Amino acid sequence: MPAPFANDSVGLVTPQTLHFDQPLELASGRTLDAYDLVIETYGELNAQKSNAVLICHALSGHHHAAGYHSEDDRKPGWWDNYIGPGKPIDTNRFFVVALNNLGGCHGSTGPRSINPQTGQPWGKDFPHLRVRDWVHSQARLADRLGIEQWAAIVGGSLGGMQAMRWALEYPDRVRHCVVIASAMNLTTQNIAFNETARQAIMSDPKYHEGNYQVHDTYPKDGLAVARMIGHITYLSDDGMGQKFGREIRSGSFQQGQDEPVEFQIESYLRYQGDAFSSSFDANTYILMTKALDYFDLAREYNDDPVEAFSHAKCRFLVVSFTSDWRFAPERSREIVDALIGADKAVSYAEVESDYGHDAFLLPIDRYYRLFTEYMKGVSTHV
Image (cartoon, rainbow, N blue to C red; front, side):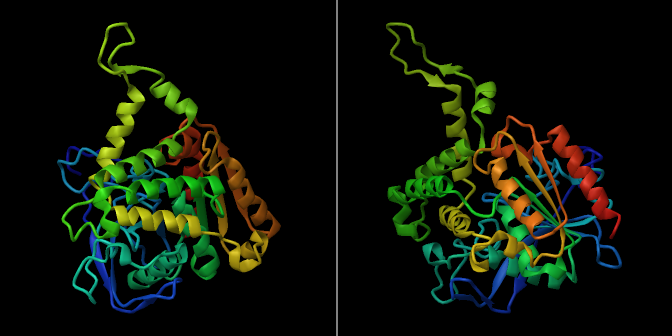
């Protein structure tokens, strides 16, 4: 292992781009004639091909879930806390697959890609996507990798929605479904937050009705504000208070001081917005938040979640966090109640945390230990 990397790191990883020629019919009625998916894999697939774990990413996630792309990288993949040798998703035991979903902006076919019919970037004309579209494309990915059944499908937030949809769409292909900080559908308030973020993007003069790539620009300011709106909802009031309080970064309240006061939280949010706007695509952000809004696990099951989960065959782990008000614990308990009503095997944990929705990304001791023990149980049957 190269010197910069810890023993529990997967080390250097290289993304792969897989091309699919078989047309994919989407829930919207449109069809993608061909598409690319970018993936990373960690660990080794066993001879029985029974130890594979799929990682489904959340809104701003992507394929780079663990390890480093170069020895100069200062920051590992987005879920490096939980993927690696000896970690909860132990790469000594599991073959882990992480991907960038369709519609993404990190190499998979999406709004930044060229529309073969026009020779121009898809932009806002890229087809609307539903969570089930991602799941169907992931099933084709599993076919390509020779994986008939996943040992586990794991996801936080929007990733948890994908994991649940897998359990209903392909019940014979999932042994364990791990749903972290998620819900069976969005609350009205969540939809409102998403729409406010989209309006921030679309109100930016550089948005150009979604065709900003043709104009060699992008709605940086609007995307930064959208990220700030989202980021506030991922944190908790207590967490922000403990981290920033009312600390002042610059300026003074003293009389005669002309420099405006800037609080630490203001500086932090602007930094987050600027960093995100330089690395993420605005049309992808709109597409992903719409997929979140559209998701309703029980819609085609007479709006009955018990009936929906009656189609699942796997075991479930559901985890929530006390300070998560974007995907509050009661939303996870709704999942658990429906699973119990459907007579499914489910374990549930509500973890004490001050970190809000972002807690599922962080190495919180109880969460880490219970996740580890559950995945050890998964690994004993591979």
